[in-house]
Amino acid sequence: MKQLAELIPVILFFVAYQLDGRTLAAAGWEYRFDGIYSATAVLMIATLAQLVLTRLLSGRVERRLLLLTAVVCAFGGATLALRNELFIQWKPTIFNWALAVGFLVTRAWSGRTVMERALGGQLQLPPEGWRRLDTLWVANFAVVGALNLFVAYRFSEATWVSYKLYSSIGFTLLVTAATVALLMPYLKDGEPPAGAP
Image 1 (cartoon, rainbow, N blue to C red):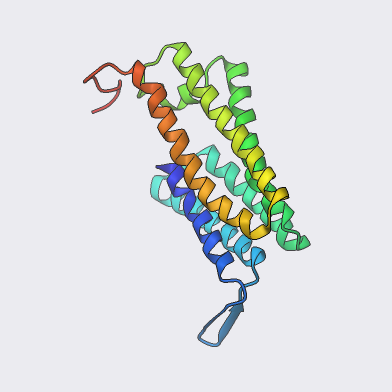
Image 2: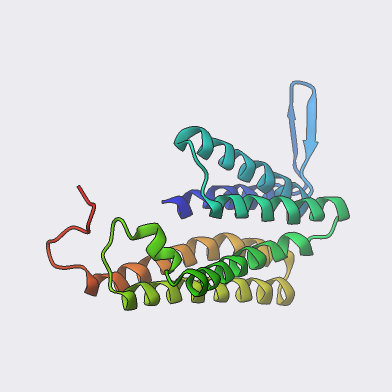
């Protein structure tokens, strides 16, 4: 569910990009959308708003959202300050590769996977199950990061913006389905996971 919520700023980024050249006017105030730069500003504002709302509604903010916000603001800020879209185009790659490295370092350092640390209270899996789940997510982050760069450098900016939206949705659904498929053999028929009501 949290990953789906993270798609809202990406959707707003896509919408703002589509408004390129249009003018928004209200109460004597006027703003003209200028493609990737307006879209980047919208992405930054939406991500910061998501961080604040998450904190207000749940009382806490996960590290993943903190990392996402930091990367969006750093790379978005560089895009706007230097008027260079490559910074925002690198953002998904840096974010995903940072998550992959974080997963690998956590497993090597603590002997437990990120998934086990996050879901160990709700699911009972053997060590092999946790490792397989962790490997699936690391592979997802690595592939998503690499594909983002491929599209950013091989295709037009407009194609990359569309790819960013549709791949975000597609990869989220794909890795979620793969996670469920991987977990199914470990869950006993009719028996809820440990900690379930």
